[in-house]
Length: 633
Image (cartoon, rainbow, N blue to C red):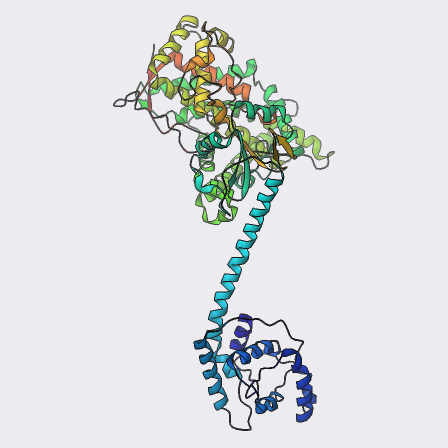
């Protein structure tokens, strides 16, 4: 009806020679037209198809509701004067009109009929010209209501269908979701891991929660997470890729990829990390050399307050940079400063509330400035990496590989000529290098900063670490082989990793096939979060999970003991591939710094006032703070 009125309103020049209209059924009009045309001898005009032919059904409706033309022979006679070829009738549209509206329509019709002299054709178009506003208003209201109703019905149908399926097969329980919103109103959007841990207390170690319309299964507690990631590694082994991760990586690289490309890139990266010293003497020498650069920066502050973020991150990023590019950067190098700053900012923003909302409702992307900022950083990072790779490519020697990039370029050149659809292409190189750099910098650097903050807060524990270092090592350089001789120090490092809990939700997994797990059916393609926080804080595994207690890793004789529930690097097919390098870095950086400095809160701040609340982000960094590194010698 709205389309009809708009059409009639725009074509004001079209006049239909018609003085009145009678209420007749549409399917009879064709017969009457033939008779009338024969009577008035207008048979030669049937070839003309008037633009208003599609509107006759609406005219019929108007006449019925306004009471026009009932028993009017004059209207029947003049109806024949209309030069219109009528198509078969379309279904009639019914809507209600109030008495007041009917009176208005009748008045318009009366005036239109009065304007035509007897025996002359009137202008029924005048009726339509004056009625549209009245009818359009009602039609718009009806259209809006109908559209809203259809949308709600579709949502309710999909939701009820999903609920019905859940009843057919025993699916994990969980809080009842709202249509469209899911369980978003129950989540702390800045720290969703807290909410998820609380929900596990109510719904158990395997439960369902909805992030918007996305169904998510959460695994909580050491035994459940271990069973899923290790004993059902194949079923839970694929990576869940969120919209923002897809935007950043485009399915390439290691962290957010699946299938053959992921397998090949992970295998190649692991092989080359080992070849370039990961877990070996070569990596140890690089870390020890970097320790000396970091110590010099701390010494320059002469015990005055300093922010540990930049120097620690630069030192750690230089280790992974030397493996990737074959060389380190100076701490003052603008290129290193910018790369680290962008990587840290993106990791922080990816864990923010706006991006959590974007992952639930991707159509919000154009209104979320945080997403725009992330993608801008990604664009700049790609350009910077291409420049570095281009420089290495120009000086590439196939007989002597300097780092990961060289190895990749050599392999790429070999496969370009003989392998179809090779995985060794530029996009995989860029994404893999980006993944290694960001993960290798942020996770280790963040854990090391937590360690220094905890030492400043718990002075007694710091004293015990330094006593052990002095007694066992003295003033010589600490080596990896000294770890077994330093059980208390090793226990402190492990407890720092446990309490810091820097990746509380782990990275999302997705089921590769239908699986029945602990009696619950989980459909293929379901996003799964192994809640690492619930493992590292599992009350059934740790004596005092919420406190900093190195005794968690010591036996009654003070010897270091491994704990099965210690899973900061995750487990299974998706466990951190740089775990051995990270463990070596943490041990050597931490012991080297504690050997030379005593860390305290800045003046005016007590140990109790040091805040252990983590900052918002994808990984949990310490809140902004300063420490004093007081030289011990």
